[in-house]
Length: 278
Image 1 (tube, rainbow, N blue to C red):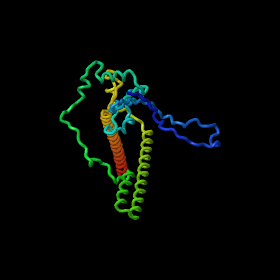
Image 2 (cartoon, rainbow, N blue to C red):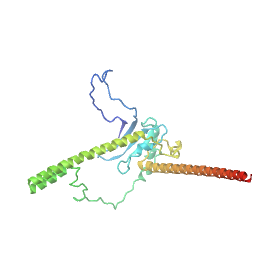
Image 3 (cartoon, rainbow, N blue to C red):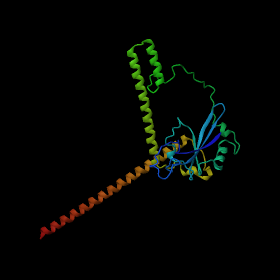
């Protein structure tokens, strides 16, 4: 097991060249940062036989809660990890005690772990076939497979037209791969910009963060997604209630205006009747 800290927002080093006239205050010692940086801890456990357990990520949070902006892009089917928070973003005594309780070591109870293991003797591993691969030979993203297919075609029909067609196809496949990579990069940049502008809100309810329940715990992405859906449902209900109250307020104001118009109309009618009698 290894514990590693990461400084979020510092991902790579970049070299830049400046002229002397553009830098009157002396040489630049490093690239400037926007200050949006946080330390998080990643705990990874990998065995010698290459088996592993899901990693654990610890975020800094004095409240002990998990922000929705930390997990809104996490898909449990693609990336399964456990999330926790501590005041410093590192491990502490409360998290260590939570590990001992969840592992059945404090108090000692092996059934805490054994009860989660389900075995089925009738399960048999499936056998793969040569046609089970979903990768397409004609996938324009895989230029290597395209070249292999073209070489096989040229071997059976070595003509000038086939050569011209193969060159055009490889060029189109390469351009398509470059454009796809560019679009993916721009899409990720947009997501990063949106994440920086979005302010996270707590996901876990206060009832789950009581000291008696153990304030520092690790939460699975499935549990966090469930709580996030509940939080979003409550937020939607609050917004609908706010809209309903606004509509009631507008209706009340409209009735008040109609009532004032009717009063003014009756007053005008009485005044005309009084003048007619004279």
